[in-house]
Length: 325
Image 1 (cartoon, rainbow, N blue to C red):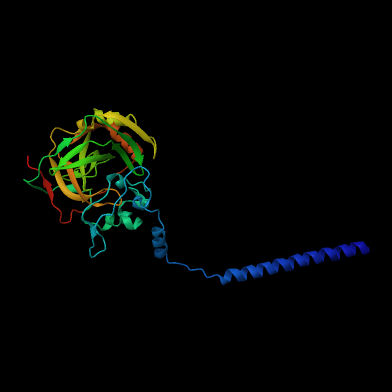
Image 2 (image 1 turned 90 degrees about the vertical axis):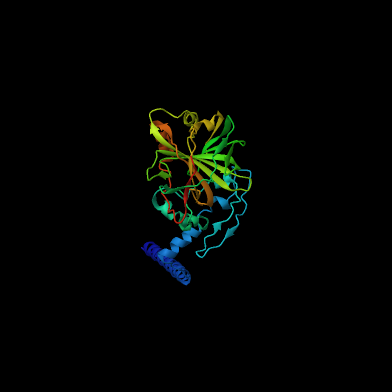
């Protein structure tokens, strides 16, 4: 009997001791937590902090795909704080944006590009943005014809980089624009077309990005309509279509120049790159004559890249010129 009583007393004592220790730990922990000040931010401030902490755009990241570094573009400040690019001193390879924080649809779509990064402000605040609707045009007699001095056969890397489908060519292909030499750097592909002729969209747009010796950028845009016959040049590329982001296919002996129509009359205006950071000061040459591609070729591009065309931008006070026939 004495043993049972002693056991019960010891059991109760242990239980009481555990309860007291637990209570002390809880009280001390609560005191520490309540002594820490927690700042709660309004939703807008939280959103802005998230934007400020978003991944740096390509202009602030190490470029592992190009050997040339991006130099600073001299700018003139405006009242709204957005610089107008006076002269683009930048290698075109650096304009291939690897950043995946932007997209063509959804919460990171074109309407919000300018809010994703300080470097992307021109996308929403710039007044010389691309693409545009080529509806009202003015014939300018001083415009000289385009001369394409592309290599007969080019080699290059065909790859998906970020949100871009890129064919980066080897050096040596030249376009004479405004009687100046511009060197072909790379080609991009968009479906549907980004530019429109008299408000009419096309099934595809192929953009040839060039740079001159002063670092100024010029893009020759080739519009394409869907027909039954496949395009021979696209066939060569599409046979080695990259399977995923970062994959590289090496293309050899591509007769790239033969993709252009015989008639290379063009529309010209000053605009921007059509992907972030939407750099302005770009000379656009949109060819009047479209080429044809097959429905399967358009579908292959859409399957891989989905919808990858920026919406039309306001023309503001810019003039679209047409070269004389």
